[in-house]
Amino acid sequence: MPKKIGIILVNYKDYAQKYLADCFSALRRQSYPSELTRIYIVDNAASPESEEFLKSHFPEAIILPRADGNYAAANNLGFKRALADGCEYLVNVNMDTVAEAGWLAELAAALENNPEAGIAQSKILLHPKNEAEKAAPKINSLGNHIHFLGFGYTDGYRQPDRAIDGYPEIKGYASGCSFIIRREAFQKVGGYNEEFYMYHDDLELGLKVKLAGDKIILAPRSVIYHKYEFQRSRQMIYYMERNRYLTMLTFYPAYFWLIMFLPCLVMDTGLFFFSMINGWFKEELKIYAYFFWPFTYKRIFFERRRVKRLKIVPFSRIARDFVGRIEFQEVANPILKYLVNPLFAGYWWVVKHLL
Image 1 (cartoon, rainbow, N blue to C red):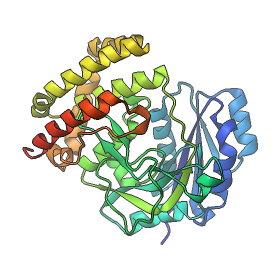
Image 2: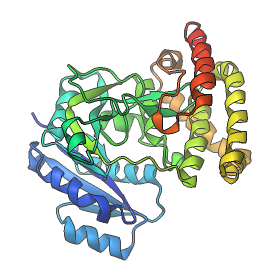
Image 3: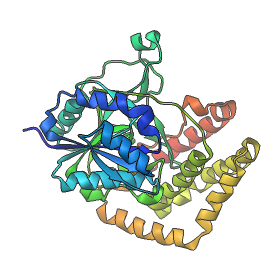
Image 4: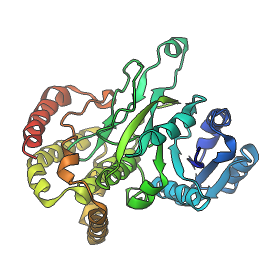
């Protein structure tokens, strides 16, 4: 029997004016029963103008205004409202996407056909910019990898689209661009850690779901196109680096920190000098300041206790699926390719065989 599904989108300032018309048009064309679908738009950093725009252009959506721009908190608000409205499946989807008509039905089918899975991710393709790209679409994500130093990147990025059979397990985590999660899985892990604010929030959620005993799978027939553009802003650099450390401090056991000490020192030394050369040294200092603040460790302590309570699967079993290479074209450079990746890949190969 089809389940009631809540779809959560997060607006930020003028995102809705840029992207929501195409996104919502695709949502209106979904083959999944409309009477079982609820759409929630969390208006993050809301203004009277943004609220009026959303209400007038998308009257069937439930608008949830917020003030502070915290992306993780915005998703939690949308999910919790959907749960209160009786939704059994919850879908996180970016506004800058266009879904195929069977996107939602195939996401739901992935969970129906795989009771051991807590999350299923769509096959995310890059939105075509011209006729050539329409004829030969490229992949944005087939799931995301987790690097052993705490950050993630997409699997399959810019590879040609291809047919995929079944529901392969995602060894890392599901991209927050488009995934579905069971009501029980979300409630079990308590949603997103709002301290992450933005970036790696989906990695943090995925790790908790796996530690709690649920699998993460790919739903390859659930196809969505992402208007992805890599933009390296100062805010992005700050949160990605800060949250990489937060991930390690929240999830890694004490013995794992001993294993990670040397590669962490190498990575952090390199990033320190790299930040000076590339003009984001202030962001690096802000990260250090965040971790010198004692109250940060109080939050980390309580979050570690919460993660420990939900853990069913040993961390070492999940860590075996971490990767030692960074393979993402947007940050590729000769030092990464010829020095960092070979060193870290070799180091991680040895560690994995000892776990």
